[in-house]
Image (cartoon, rainbow, N blue to C red):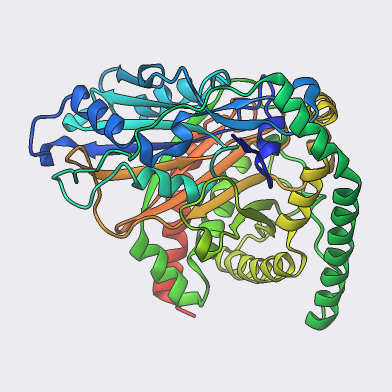
Length: 469
């Protein structure tokens, strides 16, 4: 039994009937590389063989009676792989739009909390004989980095799957804890709440002092606060339905822009998002005069924490400089804003502050407060940002699943009321893969927005080729 700690519980409490707090990966495979003919049975056998390398896949959440403390992860005594692994056949003609539509349908449904909160669909019928997998996992269990590490445990470096030794001793579920034990543990934690509150207040005060000190040393007139992003359709209530789109761009083209203007790959990604959103909102006659703000997750996972699960993230609040017409001016402004935001996050350590306050929270009060805030549209009123843009470094070498070569990998993250667009990016081999998740209420025509990412990169690359630097 393991208590949810850090920021993990908040992803549990943030879930409402319309806010589904799961992340997802869509991977596309070419089964022609497999030593044997593809079959769903082969995929199932490999997944079953490696379940012990995927600890969250057999853990379910157990809530503490009366909401006295954060939930616990426990081994599910009723675990059955067939409740989580499903076979699907995509609608003809099996192209990208059909795959996106199927993915959106799956992601529009919340995960069943009475079981380990994950699902995997093996999707057949794609054009060219390709096969896809859609893996959906609750964000309380993983962040972008730990999720990528989890998926890699299923994959091999060669078409011939590596034999994995069975666990020693064999896996045995520990049984569900009794209500008495859960309440007893919670009461012990409650006794420490005053000290935790004092600790959280101290971390908050220290963060504020660090931010002010950083502003003075950097010669900044003010500290950038996470609020006051312009109002856009991205802040509309999300509703239960999801829309999904994919995009793929050349990593070499991104790096060419990066080198031409002396910025980072992440700066170019943010500039692509800014350019695509400018065009998309302009077609709807809804482009704001003020620059939009991206909430950018930032991994704070130390090297010794690699391989651990849960969420080890902080956040930057970065201006997308979308008020500028010139794409190079936008890129340079974004690069400066990112440097400032990263330095401020390093000074404040928002992950430490956030985790400290989450530790003081009593679920019986937090969960109703979150639902009330959702109904009142608090996030859209405060507007910490307009969208989430997350960038995860993926593997630079070819990977295989049951012998089938991985040819594309699209990550996706959750959306909430007030922040109705999530763009998650992962590198693999020579490409960047973008997964977009939105609500019909927030981004009409999300597929057009995905195409706009490619157009925005080409615009920057064209200028870079003509006048680098």
